[in-house]
Length: 467
Image 1 (cartoon, rainbow, N blue to C red):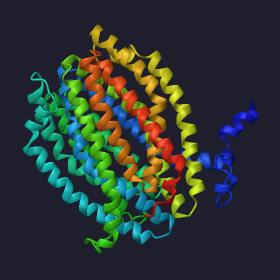
Image 2 (cartoon, rainbow, N blue to C red):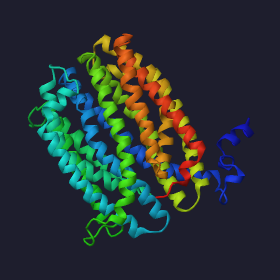
Image 3 (tube, rainbow, N blue to C red):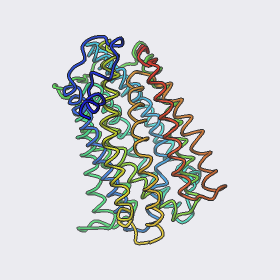
């Protein structure tokens, strides 16, 4: 038994002798580096998700329609962020690869180009969101019960979009150079500001006005601004590995070309994912305010379940980029397989918790027995999906770190654009599965992408991409 376990977990068995480009470090060292790179991001995402969980919990004090109003804005907000995340998809592999090559000035120049593009792009998108908030929310499928307050909420949080975008770009570069704690500190600070202001402004405490979800929107925007300044100070510090200065702030085509090439693949991936998710949300919203509020409660749990795999997604992307920059594709393979083993063990714990707490979790948000019973069913489906979801997320991180953003975009198109909307409509309405049909669709989507990513990983084509 010990020999069998050792063969599964030992890094020495993860790459064939013929694929090795040098000695493989001891397993303890590789697992340690994977943990060291992943845990700040995993902790960051966990705390963000927990605060989001608390955010929804506080909004639920206003009423279940308020939960739906806040939730309906998530999809259009994610579509706006798709443009920024696509930029980050180019920043991470380029900065990681330049760092692996020892070209720190090239990494800094990449960050400067990214910040300039991000500033122009985010200001444009912010203006569009402010001008067209009403039609955007109507298109999202908002019920008349909460449509007006949802549009007002969306306008306020759009103001903070510029801060979120710039902060995300800086954080993507800092993660690529092995400094994920910067992003962790920025996001934890931002979300602590958010939750404190939520407490004061939603219900009106300690003399503050009771503003309901308008207070929640103000809290979110203020938190985003604070988080950006924390990230900005990290790259202005003399000790920063990517210290910014006032020189050479002009567009450089040599640096922009690989950034645009990888970013375009990232944009295709993000647009497929976010637009597909938007249509998916629209379908779920048409099930009614009660079903959509139940969906939002379950989405909070899903966000929590993603946290650890997202941490290893980011870690795998950084370690893959650095390994390929050092001409060690064998180590990129080892890091990916190491992350898969760790996240699978985490998945087993998550599955058990979702099943055991399937009634207690929704009861935190509502006393309605029908919503609690429906949410409990969804949590069982979510538990089944978790190990599949975590595995494909780690594969995606490896592909992004290698610069294989075109393939990541293809899997997103197949999963989010082809499978999710079509299967959700079929299962929710034609076969009358209701909300459960939407979550069965999520399971099918995750399984398809896992199969596609696994085949791509085994082909090793991603190790030959030049950045």
